Length: 69
View 1 (tube, rainbow, N blue to C red):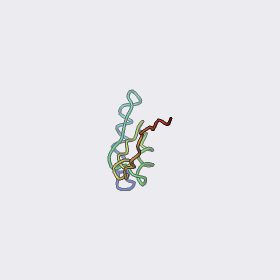
View 2 (view 1 turned 90 degrees about the horizontal axis):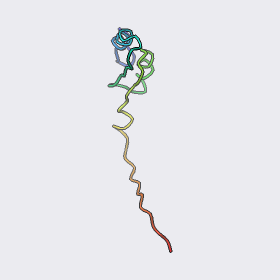
View 3 (view 1 turned 45 degrees about the vertical axis):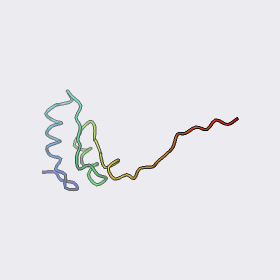
């Protein structure tokens, strides 16, 4: 078992080996700044990281346009 930050990447490595480049692969779930490197090193094509938006505080930006004479 290859663990980094509590993530077992051995299954990811096995899946990447199994598909042998025939399809793109994606890892998601428990992806953090502490785990992303180990996940990337498994060879997956894409990594989804919901943490980028889950804990982010929204910024309210208005796109109102005022026409000046």
